[in-house]
Amino acid sequence: MSYRPTAADNVGVAGVQFILDGAPLGFEVSQSRLTLELERNDRGDRWHTLAARARDAATNQTTSTTVSVTVAIATPTITWPTPANNVYGAALSGTQLNADGERAGTLIYTPAAGRCCRPERADRCR
Image (tube, one colour):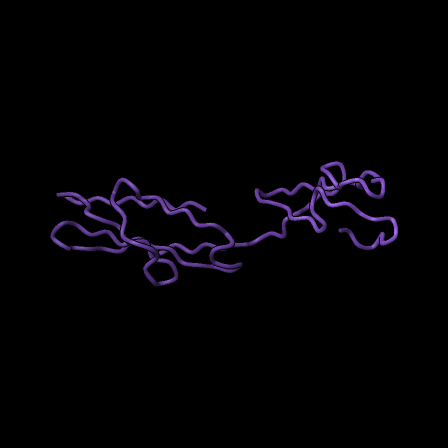
């Protein structure tokens, strides 16, 4: 989610403090960096309020109108086609470990690629 307020002053804006749910969020930023990026999973699945407080060099300040946003975290979808057969003793590879997700990230497999399954213990890999 991106939040980009505008700030103006007759002399110039010295800094802007973002406010999330009534509390300062991070450090004050300069006019040139006046965009706030929030990751959905940073703040939880609920509604939030956002505002920005601008100040000039003489320390005069004003706070923007508060906006309300609802953050809904969707459950990611993982697609995993039926894995290809693997010969006992052969290392697992991308042929078997080929799941794909709709979001960026890393899928971790147990057992990992390169591990071999033994025929006498088909339920465990070494």
